[in-house]
Structure formats: C-alpha cells, structure tokens
Length: 166
Image (cartoon, rainbow, N blue to C red; front, side):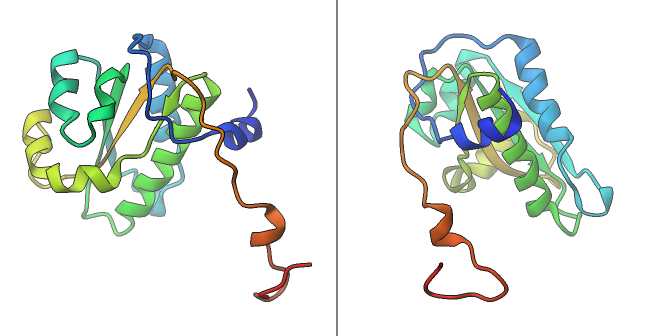
C-alpha cells in the first residue's frame, strides 16, 4: 500500500482479534516513528513495545478495549525539548500510517493515557524526567471502521479563510 492510500484508509481501530504481530512488523512501525520530522533535529523520543499479555492487561486500565491488541507502543518523550509534543505527535502519526500500510489497526490513546501517566511510567520503567505522551495499541482489526471524513471542499480555503468554499 502506498503512503497516500494508507493515509486515506487510516482510522482509529478499537477492536482487535488478539493475534500476535511479528516483531519485524513492530520494528517497521516504530522505525516510521523514529523517522518523523523533529524540531531542530532533537529526536526527543523513545518507544517501548509491549507484547506481554500481563503487561497489556495492566495498561488496559487506560482503555478496556486494548485487551486484544497484539502490541501497545508507549511513546516516551523528553520534555526538555522545546517541541516535544509536536515531535511526539509527528512520530505517532507516522506509526499510525505505517501500521495501516502493513494491514494493522491502531489508535491514538493520549487522552486516556494522561490520567495514568505516573502509574504507567512506573510500570514501564520510564525515567522520572521523561513524559509518557501516549499509548498506541496495534492489532489485527476485527473490522475497519467506515467513518466518513469531511470533504476536501469543506475544509480547503484559497488565499484567505472563507465561510463558503467554491
């Protein structure tokens, strides 16, 4: 699947079969995150790939539906970098697209991760000075959601913002 096709197909998938994901595919997905754009080339990230079922059971506190994910990628950032949130976001989006291109479903879990950040950092051995930006569950999808996106004509503006697009 090419990049544009993966971007068009990517959806937040929250139902997985529980099938394992080959290590090589997980490395490919994380490598896509590693290759993301980064402010001042700081690369303030680390990625923890969790495949252990007992550990996934601990992490599913953030979202019960993660229980059948084949893996969960914890995205760890160094907040001393000026653009750590933006850099982490770029890495996450790359990983979501890479997962889709490889035929896996994924979901960005940031809003549910934050309330458990300290607990999850301890569980995953994340150093105190680092931040856990999000968890990204990856898995073989039970089905692909068919949610429609806004049409391009509704969001594109030329030269200036206009309330009516032509």
